[in-house]
Amino acid sequence: DETEQIYVDDEREQLLMQAQRQYEKTGNVAYLAVCMNFFLALRVGEIVALKTTDFSADSVQITRQEVKTYHVDADGRRHRLGYGISPYPKSPAGNRTLYLSKNARKYYHMILEHNRCNGLKGEYLFMDGNGERLHDYAINNVLRRVNRQIGTTQKGNHSIRKTCISNMIASKQLTNEEIRKFAGHEDFATTERYYEFATKSLEERTDAFEAALG
Image (cartoon, rainbow, N blue to C red):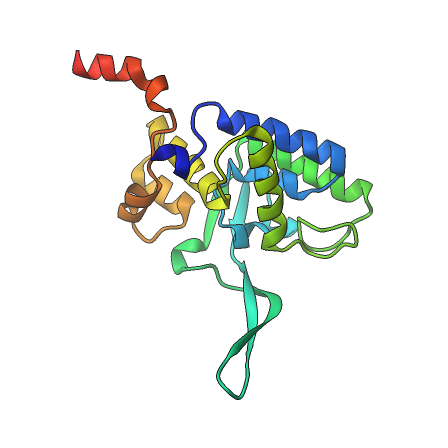
């Protein structure tokens, strides 16, 4: 069911507006991370690993990701220590250059201005008030909150990723190879099988069905 997998109909616009309102209310830059990712389709670990040096005027380099670190005790049990940064993406295809759309650039500059106004001078794009890098849970927490506020099903960052990629496929403006590279997949079959959904609900697609079946 698309409504469980992605943001359908006007849910994306509702979420973008509510996330911006929450950012203005709280000053929590994680809300802007949620907004920007609707136009980048990043994995959550890739979002929080972004550095300002990854960005140019119209593109961003994806080269690293956040990973959880563990300690294995004498009994072979794993205990989580915290978070680290891997200098490698999830797969070789994850090392990619993404086009920064007009909307992506808008949120990027809002984030830069947020950091400047708050005196945050760390190397990472997303930082808390103490200048420490945000972790994946910071993104997940605000997304859960905004989902509740707009009254939609609870959907995670992966749903944002699926929504963005589904919109790219539906646009018919890009080749399969361009979309595959943007998604960071090894082959388009993965993109097509797991990331292509109708971004309109059945109620919004009645005209299309009538045209196809008529």
